[in-house]
Length: 230
Ligand code: HEM
Image (cartoon, rainbow, N blue to C red; front, side, top):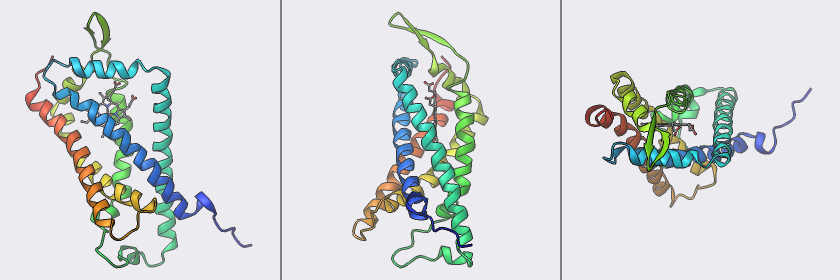
């Protein structure tokens, strides 16, 4: 019996488009999340960071819509990533052939071969991270007469533990590797294949990755050394 050929979203190309879209959505979240976290650098004892977090939580149902979309995007991205990797492995008799570039400057960095490994590490990190912060202990503070969660205190307290601070910083190197190749792949999967634009898009993806992972890298280290416990 002949197997039916995969169609539409079920083709490798379709799956790569889904990966590109969900990946860019997750990158967008990371940019917003980093912007929020950088408020920890404001030297006002956490007032700005707590106000930021409190404002987000006051969005109520809208926040839950974003959270659910985020979770679905994350799960879809992981499942599709695993499927594409398994399909590629199965489809190529000669595994070495997949490391060959089709001309032009090679974009196959060690990071591209490491996508699945760095992806698994991120999939392990995120639930642990959410458990540490979103679901962590509830400290309370009062700002402008309004009681609110002291998320700043929780972040500073955790990053005063050397294992947490340096573990987080180390993880950001893996995140950076995943983003550099991932953003570039997403651009390509979504059709940015014009040779004239390729160096620009590759540069853009790399700079974006370095800024995102760099921001997340500096925060725990800076907190560990320079931010006093509230
Ligand atoms: C220095 C690095 C980071 C810090 C200080 C940090 C801080 C936080 C904090 C404080 C929260 C809880 C927010 C709240 O409940 O108000 C949180 C939630 C979260 N973080 Fe991070 N984060 C960092 C890196 C990351 C990275 C790299 C990712 C993804 C790869 C990530 C994904 C998330 C997610 C998915 C949530 C749950 C959001 C929610 O509860 O609505 N974070 N983070």
